[in-house]
Length: 152
Image (cartoon, rainbow, N blue to C red):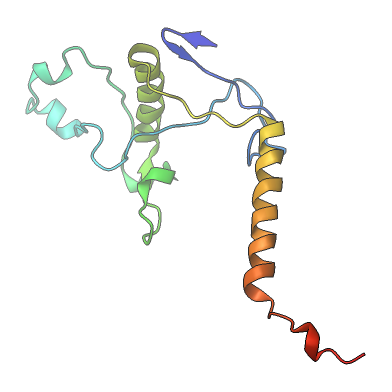
């Protein structure tokens, strides 16, 4: 599917690490932005009380959704954690905003989407790195055998 500058490749049943995944519909790999503070969030109280200037909404896409923990619409995201911290849960509306941002920035700005390698290249990489790993382990982990010490 193409939209503007972007071509969205459909996720297939055995793409990459997604073995036997349910690839129904037209799914693409998500490429979210950094989650923390990536979108401006306005509370309903501020909106109804008039504390928000109308210019904040000018030329913007507005998503309305829950961010309250009682709603239980939270999801873990790959960009919501660092190397040593557990993933932070993000609200469903913020996750949807990331998907929308990915689609729009890909279509309008040419932002690169995540793709998987073709299956022959995946097999070549697996075989190559297995060969390198096996050779390194044989060279580094096995003791050097002195053939003069072997008794026949």
